[in-house]
Image (cartoon, rainbow, N blue to C red; front, side):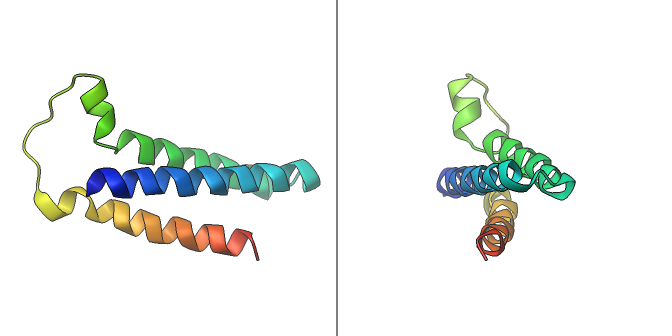
Length: 89
């Protein structure tokens, strides 16, 4: 479940980042540049929290806490979806 949510977050944040970059190319605003930096930070969070990354790097994490392993990612998904929706308005 966490893999699906973090992959979804990565795709949505990537779309958000692409949108902010296209806006920055048009208006060259410092605020838009800060949104790009914020989106990159969120993208790094989404990529680093994906359980496939430790698997591919052959890292074996300790025990998990069930629901609490992917609940923050659901909240991040909601926040990113709101940002994406507002950026297209």
